[in-house]
Length: 126
Image (cartoon, rainbow, N blue to C red; front, side, top):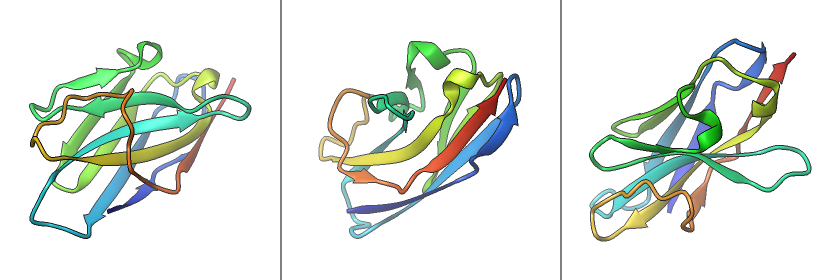
């Protein structure tokens, strides 16, 4: 299992920026490869994938955030830089991870993620 702790949420006006961070710790440091992503859930809506990072440090983004959000990873910290925020971005944001025994993260937002953080709230006012 991975323990994930998010931070960086808050309230901003439309057009503003926020940076979310997720610090990960693992029960098993030896292996496997942990693949990480950001998800969000707005009130009354289903959870949706926002961005996932691949082993080669490229990323997969939801269409709604392309060109505005940037995901990055440095060691055990996953970051989501969010620019030009819109009211529609208002949601609880979650960091998630799963173990990949093939040692490759494909950036798949549709697969099952097995570890989740508690979430950090992002509110964008118009």
